[in-house]
Image 1 (cartoon, helix red, strand yellow):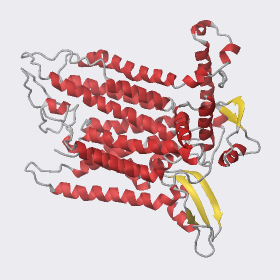
Image 2 (cartoon, helix red, strand yellow):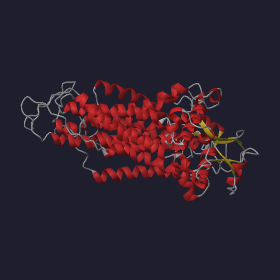
Image 3 (cartoon, one colour):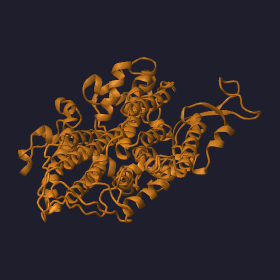
Length: 560
């Protein structure tokens, strides 16, 4: 068995009569004969261990190469780098965020680019996102200095590492190195993910930690079901059902997932919806496994034996990790709002809360008010984008633009009568996104229709990264937030492309005609996506273009 079709869906209708270690084969919802229960619980991993890692590292290296290529260009602050790069350096230098000089306008940016780093005031600054992403940017600044390469180093690194995680996660889900590699290639050449990997904003780190958390949950699913499968070796008397099954209270992959979710929350609060969605999904996995084993009162026991420990190891660990990310703020009395509790004595039940944590709670209330208050609801922005249009790239965002570049300027050789321009557009690779939208619809059908657990992962990830933003569409929100959606999009695409590929060999060991046709279709799609990425490359990387060449890449008026 090979490709996506090598993994048998679980959760399908089946009957396991495990008497003295034997089991009767069941049938799925389409009437197809199912393999033994042990194999359904834990299909064997691919045997190409070395080949799998060679493919993974090669694609990751390619993703890293194109992200690090001329990473320091343009040598200026791009879009919101003006906030995050300076906040990160402030954390590095003082341990908490300070305000920076702002008179005349842009004075701090100009000073930093000229090599003068003495741009901070003595007063603390209210930063409206948690600190994890800024500490990650600060690590690059510590390694390479307070310059464009320094503050973009970690976004590029973690953008490439996200590609690695997607490859390994999809490979584990499908038991196919080929399908995992396809997912990695598609993510490597997505325009939005590429641009977000080359600017010092927070969202690329959010995407990484979310994918890392989901990757841990998929690994836990395997880890747990491998142990469940071993329990089938224990005989059960005729007419009896299996008892409690394995307790498996300590599940290291889930604890690690909780840490990753906590770091995602410590980057941006929007991670909470993904945590909630996958919390429900992993419970469904646990219940499905115990029901397949024939455990008595499977739902109730899954709540007690799986659900409660899962809440502790994922949700509570995430909460503790998130709180730990505020250690720097808690340790610095000069941090913004740190003195709130001393100025406002506690009343009622709040008297039992230590002052530092009461001040931190008030800080969170101020940040929440910023994101939901009248100030931001009344704000406007030319690049504001309704989330309803994100799946089809209805309104991408421009991060930087230099217009009216005159002929004769290096790189500007336009036709007579034209000028040039250079832009950085956070534009997803169109063919990838549009194909991904169709793949997500197919994934939903396959998840519900055939109860194939794997398709639930991209659906839950995509929906929880996207749908919550509809509640905030009365304030300016932007397409680049959708960078967290694209890893789940390519997962769905890879799974659907695996279905198109079909099995590598027939029952007689010969290549099937379907495989030949499927390979041509899948190969053509991947090549088309790569070519599409190459075509939009100049508007992703600030290249100087004649105005007509730029317009040829602006396929819709809403993109301009």
